[in-house]
Length: 123
Image 1 (spheres, rainbow, N blue to C red):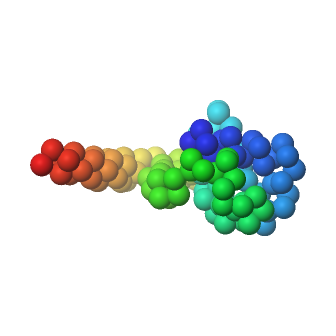
Image 2 (spheres, rainbow, N blue to C red):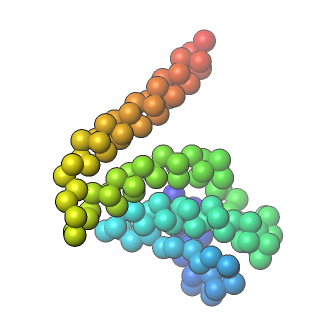
Protein backbone atom coordinates (compact mmCIF):
# COMPACT_ATOMS: atom_id res chain seq x y z
CA UNK A 1 0.00 0.00 0.00
CA UNK A 2 2.76 2.40 1.00
CA UNK A 3 4.78 1.62 -2.12
CA UNK A 4 1.77 2.33 -4.34
CA UNK A 5 1.09 5.63 -2.56
CA UNK A 6 4.73 6.64 -2.96
CA UNK A 7 4.70 5.71 -6.65
CA UNK A 8 1.53 7.70 -7.34
CA UNK A 9 2.88 10.72 -5.46
CA UNK A 10 6.15 10.59 -7.42
CA UNK A 11 4.44 10.16 -10.80
CA UNK A 12 2.11 13.09 -10.13
CA UNK A 13 4.78 15.44 -8.78
CA UNK A 14 7.27 14.62 -11.56
CA UNK A 15 4.72 15.21 -14.32
CA UNK A 16 5.15 11.64 -15.60
CA UNK A 17 1.51 10.87 -14.79
CA UNK A 18 0.44 12.73 -17.93
CA UNK A 19 2.51 10.32 -20.04
CA UNK A 20 0.29 7.41 -19.03
CA UNK A 21 -2.79 6.42 -21.03
CA UNK A 22 -4.69 6.07 -17.74
CA UNK A 23 -3.72 8.53 -15.03
CA UNK A 24 -2.91 7.26 -11.56
CA UNK A 25 -5.51 7.95 -8.88
CA UNK A 26 -4.29 9.38 -5.61
CA UNK A 27 -5.78 8.08 -2.38
CA UNK A 28 -7.87 10.48 -0.31
CA UNK A 29 -7.74 9.50 3.37
CA UNK A 30 -11.36 10.48 4.05
CA UNK A 31 -12.73 8.49 1.09
CA UNK A 32 -11.73 4.87 1.63
CA UNK A 33 -12.87 3.71 -1.83
CA UNK A 34 -10.11 5.83 -3.34
CA UNK A 35 -7.65 3.31 -1.87
CA UNK A 36 -9.07 0.64 -4.19
CA UNK A 37 -9.11 3.07 -7.12
CA UNK A 38 -5.45 3.90 -6.45
CA UNK A 39 -4.47 0.22 -6.33
CA UNK A 40 -6.39 -0.50 -9.53
CA UNK A 41 -4.78 2.42 -11.35
CA UNK A 42 -1.29 1.34 -10.27
CA UNK A 43 -1.94 -2.28 -11.31
CA UNK A 44 -3.24 -1.26 -14.75
CA UNK A 45 -0.47 1.30 -15.32
CA UNK A 46 2.52 -0.79 -14.20
CA UNK A 47 3.39 -1.99 -17.74
CA UNK A 48 3.48 1.61 -18.99
CA UNK A 49 5.47 2.77 -15.96
CA UNK A 50 8.01 0.03 -16.69
CA UNK A 51 8.18 1.22 -20.31
CA UNK A 52 8.85 4.79 -19.17
CA UNK A 53 11.32 4.09 -16.34
CA UNK A 54 12.56 0.56 -16.97
CA UNK A 55 11.93 -2.60 -14.97
CA UNK A 56 14.59 -1.74 -12.38
CA UNK A 57 12.91 1.55 -11.44
CA UNK A 58 13.30 1.74 -7.65
CA UNK A 59 9.77 2.91 -6.96
CA UNK A 60 8.24 -0.30 -8.34
CA UNK A 61 10.76 -2.82 -7.01
CA UNK A 62 8.80 -3.52 -3.82
CA UNK A 63 5.37 -3.74 -5.44
CA UNK A 64 4.25 -7.36 -5.45
CA UNK A 65 1.85 -7.54 -8.42
CA UNK A 66 0.25 -10.81 -7.28
CA UNK A 67 -0.45 -9.38 -3.84
CA UNK A 68 -1.71 -6.17 -5.45
CA UNK A 69 -4.08 -8.17 -7.67
CA UNK A 70 -5.34 -10.19 -4.66
CA UNK A 71 -5.90 -7.06 -2.61
CA UNK A 72 -7.89 -5.48 -5.46
CA UNK A 73 -10.06 -8.59 -5.72
CA UNK A 74 -10.59 -8.59 -1.95
CA UNK A 75 -11.63 -4.92 -1.79
CA UNK A 76 -13.96 -4.92 -4.83
CA UNK A 77 -16.94 -6.30 -2.93
CA UNK A 78 -16.66 -3.58 -0.28
CA UNK A 79 -16.67 -0.86 -2.94
CA UNK A 80 -19.62 -2.46 -4.72
CA UNK A 81 -21.51 -2.62 -1.43
CA UNK A 82 -20.84 1.00 -0.52
CA UNK A 83 -21.74 2.16 -4.05
CA UNK A 84 -25.01 0.21 -3.96
CA UNK A 85 -25.93 1.35 -0.46
CA UNK A 86 -25.22 5.06 -0.88
CA UNK A 87 -28.13 5.78 -3.22
CA UNK A 88 -29.87 9.09 -2.59
CA UNK A 89 -32.68 8.88 -5.15
CA UNK A 90 -33.78 5.27 -4.54
CA UNK A 91 -34.23 3.32 -1.32
CA UNK A 92 -31.38 0.95 -0.52
CA UNK A 93 -32.41 -0.52 2.84
CA UNK A 94 -33.56 -3.72 1.12
CA UNK A 95 -29.96 -4.36 0.00
CA UNK A 96 -28.43 -4.18 3.48
CA UNK A 97 -29.09 -7.80 4.46
CA UNK A 98 -27.92 -9.03 1.05
CA UNK A 99 -24.60 -7.19 1.31
CA UNK A 100 -24.19 -8.20 4.96
CA UNK A 101 -24.41 -11.86 3.89
CA UNK A 102 -22.16 -11.33 0.86
CA UNK A 103 -19.51 -9.61 2.96
CA UNK A 104 -19.66 -12.23 5.72
CA UNK A 105 -19.23 -15.02 3.15
CA UNK A 106 -16.42 -13.09 1.48
CA UNK A 107 -14.60 -12.70 4.78
CA UNK A 108 -15.18 -16.36 5.70
CA UNK A 109 -13.67 -17.44 2.39
CA UNK A 110 -10.49 -15.48 3.11
CA UNK A 111 -10.43 -16.70 6.71
CA UNK A 112 -10.66 -20.30 5.49
CA UNK A 113 -7.83 -19.71 3.00
CA UNK A 114 -5.67 -18.23 5.76
CA UNK A 115 -6.50 -21.12 8.13
CA UNK A 116 -5.66 -23.70 5.46
CA UNK A 117 -2.33 -22.01 4.77
CA UNK A 118 -1.52 -21.98 8.49
CA UNK A 119 -2.34 -25.68 8.79
CA UNK A 120 -0.14 -26.50 5.79
CA UNK A 121 2.77 -24.59 7.30
CA UNK A 122 2.45 -26.50 10.58
CA UNK A 123 2.73 -29.88 8.86
